[in-house]
Image 1 (cartoon, rainbow, N blue to C red):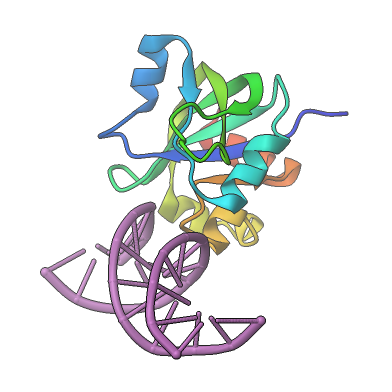
Image 2: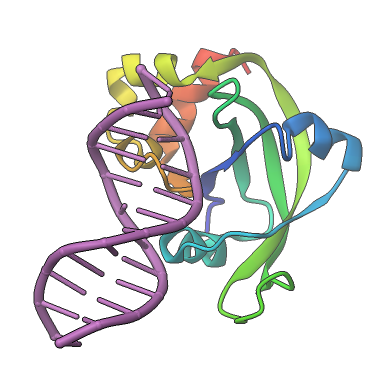
Amino acid sequence: MATAHWLVKSEPNSYSFDDLVRDGRTVWDGVRNNAAALHLRAMKEGDELLFYHSQEGKEIVGIARVVRTAFPDSSDPSGRFVAVELVPVRPLKRPVTLGDMKANTALSNMAMLRQSRLSVSPVTADEWAALMAMAEA
DNA sequence: GCCAACGTTGGC
DNA sequence: GCCAACGTTGGC
């Protein structure tokens, strides 16, 4: 099966794309939302993710890749939620802002635009292609 | 099982 | 700082 694409949000104040580049690899944990957790569980090794900065920046700044599929989130005492592990792939040549995304009708059905609070969301192949064109990546 | 109250996220 | 969206909690 072809690799899927996703978008993850992070507040750069707490963990930025630069932090991921510095760390080389990170455990993506702390997701406490069932819809987001479903997406985490669906991720496969090699899937690529857009790394979005919420609150500060409000833009997609880079691409990351899944290197370990869902496993129990050790920070979750209830044991209900999962984490994955990510590595950085590359920063975008040009970050794609939320405003850019909203202005592009090709992205009007994008999950993260339709449900703004969702911290992990799927990205279709068409949306991915449109975003890559916007990022000149 | 319903629903009001409350908390959190995140854009503006 | 405000507010909309939406998930969770708790009383009934």
